Image (cartoon, rainbow, N blue to C red):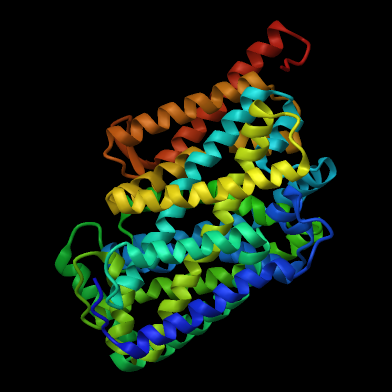
Length: 494
């Protein structure tokens, strides 16, 4: 169904969408490789991206369309609690600086393309490799689907209802990703990030001017939260501080375990490139803080929506002319394409190297690997589309919450081996299994909320479920490893 709200808005959106589509198709000629029929070239851009390209690429797949939509929506709904995304991005950058260069060196030296490649290279254990690969694949699918949620919000706001516009957009994405691989989202990320910065900077300057300044914005939001009551407000309640802190820490540890974020790391041309990015990436945290403020501004503007996901589109349509809201919607829509492309590439790399090559066709050629990865990237996008078309949106969101819990359980297998060889594969596999099964069980028992309340000594402690599962994972790995070491002096491998 089409009921266009503002033709200027839609026209600007389509112009910029067409621009990035053209860029996507010509990206295969950018930084052209001698041989595109290699997984390194298609899936990692030839491992030749420097500081600025890596900065835009990593930022582009870390700060997604759903981030721009969901963070202000959470702030709009609950207030200060929604800002947990800020400390987690602050925590994650020192982690990148310390850990990711070492991971890059290991991967580059051995020609590893995925996290599961690194794990197999470290422990020589196919079962542990498969566990890491399958976890990455399953955790990525709902994350791609949520990019569609962000795009759906802005396309629906312009009056284009139904699934057809989303399907067309993702078919175009699928075609140019198939052709150009990682080069396509890397090139488009330049345009996407510049547009997002323009939108946010204009919004945080112009919107308060319309609403009487930031004092009026905070006062209006505070009044709304006071009327709501409960755990909402401009300041965290005492009961929110522990879950807020554990959500931030757990999310930080999980963030760079995802296949798409690691793809950006592996595509860098040097370890120093990654260190430089860890220094530069906090600029995105500043941007995220400004984006979060849009949730407060929506209250001051009197925005009323049935779903918090619609807050940002309605706010822009309320306070800006059609051409600028169209520009903003294009930035958000393109912000869905970049991470979705990288996510599908990361997932296809995992399947190709750690499922297809490991179990189906160990003799596959380099050209065969690249072809399998291209086909799988199409299948992954179709799967993400199916999640949106056939499942309730809330189900995709719930699955993404589980995705963070699941991907965090790969942390010990991937990261610990970079610093110590004390752990053995069976111990890490046991820890992974306990973390996955235990964390999933608790999450479902609690109704798929991200935090769980423990009662210890009569006191309640509410903690991020993923972090609880991670703690159980590490404890089991340490205990099992100590038992293995006591009963068998030789290192256990398989």
